[in-house]
Image 1 (spheres, helix red, strand yellow):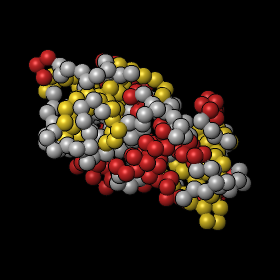
Image 2: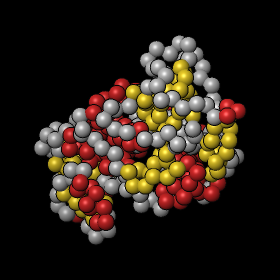
Image 3: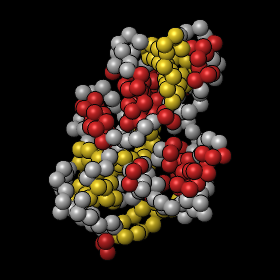
Image 4: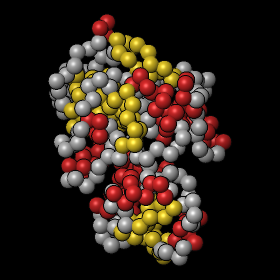
Amino acid sequence: MPRPIRKYDEMKAVVYEKYGPPNVVAVKDIPTPVARDNEVLVGIAATTVSAGDVRMRAFDVPGNAFVRFMARLFLGIRGPKRKILGMQVAGRVEAAGANVTKFQVGDEIFASTFGTGFGGHAEYKCFPEDSIISLKPSNVSLTEAATYPIPALGALNVLKRANIQSGQKVLIYGASGAVGTFAVQLAKYWGAEVTGVCSESNFELVKSIGCDHLIDYHISDFTQAGEKYDVIFDAVEKLSRRSSKSALTENGVFLNIGSQGKEDVNELTELKDIIEKGALRAVIDRTYPLDKIVEAYQYADTWHKRGNVVITMSSAD
């Protein structure tokens, strides 16, 4: 059931006023947003601390000087323009504007906040009904649903370019991370023979989601092993096509998660269908309540999380 709005129309949110280490974020009471005519107000049950959240909080943006300059313009020169992080959520519709037709109060949804100013690390957020929001998959919990809209949608968006066919050989570099775990499962869904590259400590996890072969990047360089792949997908932005070329077949395709295109709500719906077929499950490393957000960032900052780090609200299932 929808939960009541907090007393005095305030909500708890994780706010950061400056870039820096995990302790720059703090839980504060701020006004609860009000849905406009074309918006729904979502009571957030779960969100995540993603690699993108970590990079924005610390302003640790990969790339050359121009890329960093453009990122500074987007994120804020003197300090964050958008003071609440959180790139993906799952929750329930608490209120719907007069012109909303796709959703109604009580609907369970999952959504990306990337095009709506972020803001997932809060108890409530408004979404235009034509943003990247969909009814959540019926066969997963709200806690699980919160892990899909950014890494799974990104993996789907990029991997579709390769038109993966049954029997093809696909290598996923960074197979144990949030993007990588979904990429492994998507490649298997399309019938590929999948090799995952990660640390040996994560072999069992990656094997459990269907990976056929495993390479420990600490001790083996896949580009020197003599194996050829139809698709190489870099899920952690550590490779280049040039460095990977020796491991590609003559018509092989190199893909990088950094080349993801514009988000598309139709792809979120496609993702929902794949999840409901049982072909894609969430890998959750750790779960924290909202008031432990600093600890969640401290763990995410190690860059050794396996799958997703989830933040739950009081209404999480």
